[in-house]
Length: 456
Image (cartoon, rainbow, N blue to C red; front, side, top):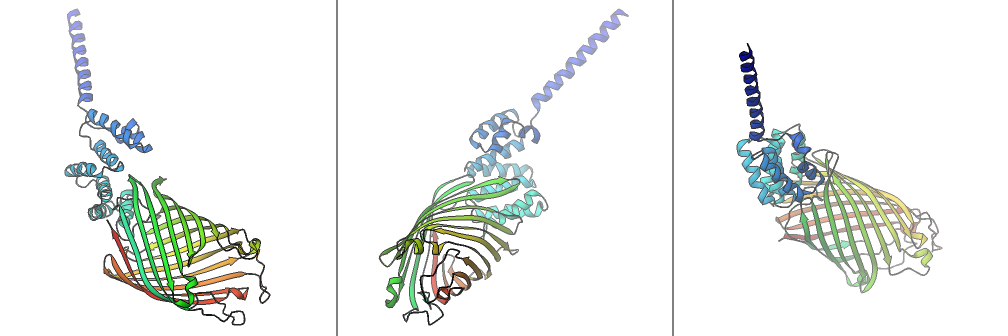
């Protein structure tokens, strides 16, 4: 009996040691990590915090422990992509798809890497498949949103890899029926030439100073020149603008938002005389609440100084702070080549001269249609209300207070000869009603332009 007890005890010990060895052997052979374990790891925490340099080192340590783990390899590729090393990320995503061709997240992030590396066509193909295979999922919704960004109507603020330089401009001739804003009431208007033809030339340049991950910084410069017919040379206008545009894609809840901060310094000249100097800041947030929409929230703050303060600066000076805060909502068609938009804005001016203190707002509705890749149609209409609460008339002819309603209507047709060169015809109608008749006027502007753009 004693020998039997010893034998049984020895057997139990051997079995226990064997099972324990197998358990440790399983730990050693384990080659995958769960999603929860990864998110709770140092690498997961660093990735979520946006510290991608350190994420990469932490991921490499985990991959040594779990070689070949698809989750870790996918996150390593995503991290490389966020660091601006998309060309290194793409082969990893493609290798993962060889073993699981239907893995929706991998295809979505491969599309991102293609897009950031400058290959929008391949990105669109990946996202189109995700939108189809992942319909009803978060990735499907993200893919539909991303498809919008890869087209001509992409979300304008999204930082992407682009060519370093972009140059765009226009040159045209237009007729203006009321350059001097002559009042409609003939009894209040001086007899003078009011209509004129003019040449208009614009040139804008953008240089990408910095682009990494989801952030971008652009340097902008633009110049404008108008040349009127001889009788109205004093209204020839020249302006120059230089500025910086900073954008960063962030996540708010589960939604992508492109936060923007832009600064511009502007100078304007009438003929050879300084007309205005302005410092302008624009804060913006750009996002989508549905796949075929875009919502832009903005606030423009301008500090303006004007050369001519008039005979009584406390009344007639326009120097001051101007603010426009608003929201623009875009609604796209199924193919994203057509869209409608609605803008609502609150405006205010706090000026040195009380006559230009104002509060008000305006609303604009518009439509863009592209019935053919060469033909584009645009139409819009806006209504602006302005209340000059401290206004006092400087004329005895009409001493009414100033309260304005401005309505405008615009229509344009553009034909693209090449993807970079087009010709445009347009017409704009402006009518201003005012409690003070001095500020009632009607204006017709129409003309033709050559437009162009170039990236390199």
